[in-house]
Length: 457
Image (cartoon, rainbow, N blue to C red):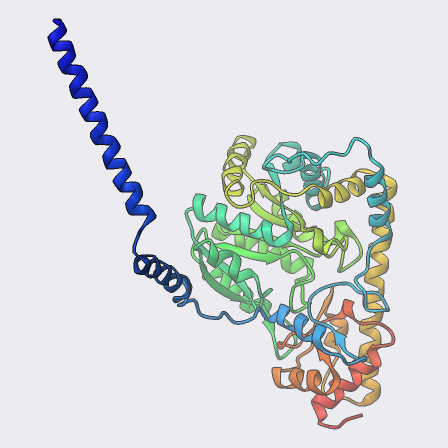
């Protein structure tokens, strides 16, 4: 390349750089001396955007969840005689949630455990917890357990277990119709509706006898389409306190299997009816012993007093061990985008109690004492209403079982008791018997008598 050509390139490069520098200077000057109105306009626009309508302007206010609305109303009531018989919590004579002695003991041990870790659990939770939970409901000698046909995953209490099961069924089961008892626990429909399943009901409670409408139940389940999912409560039916007998459960089992229905059990109160964990699990064990498939949602909220720890599990009993392994692999994919993995503390408490014979026995003794006290409170309430001559047959208080009494009081009578006596309970008349005490039974009896007769005692 000649020197003349080189000089030409150098000159062109200088001209190009000079042009670029001039453009940059002009741009900087323009930015530094922008018109005041332009700046103001920008501020006004920004302010208008920030102060405009909410992105959620069209969101409507949802109705309060009834049971929690009762809790809030109770907490705001300054009355010294107020009584909370709404949400299902076992309370002491002083009205405080009862913490089991064995639970306090285990928590002290966990605090002193130098090997304790806060590492993430696997998606399926604590393996030992899952095994012991399955054994608790199915029995350690269950053929399904021995044949590895059961897969169990730790979930967020009974509600989380039910929702996980509902989502699994929505994705992997051919039938999307779920039958619920009429009535049922108020949150039951939500689990299945949120998963996209279709709801139907089967007759269960007879308001005339205040007992089980067994024939109506059989008729409705007999009319269900093959493969339909049926939700049962293992024991201590919420809200009615009415359970089938073992003989009736056997007839239900035969019908369910002959129709090819898929049973899904809610096991929230095992041990709270009879005080025996094995006795209260007989209904679900019938459906496992026959070799068929079923789902079971476990909860430790009520039976160990671990309400706020949210401890539960979902078990799915399958035809073969291979199917169980494949089901578990899909349960992981249901759990992963929901909450990824469950918490440690509550499951560690349960595991410590279930695996230690001394602590297990201590727990069952405490549980039996809780149940005996509920039965005693039932008797006292029945006697108090009888002594007052309260109109009506109140024998159902003694016939119903578990934590709840479906009193037969209507919404207007419940509202009267809340206004005049500061007693808070479900508008359907469900009374949490575990929320009573020996000293509050007479007060409740006075309120019921006044609500029924219109006469203040």
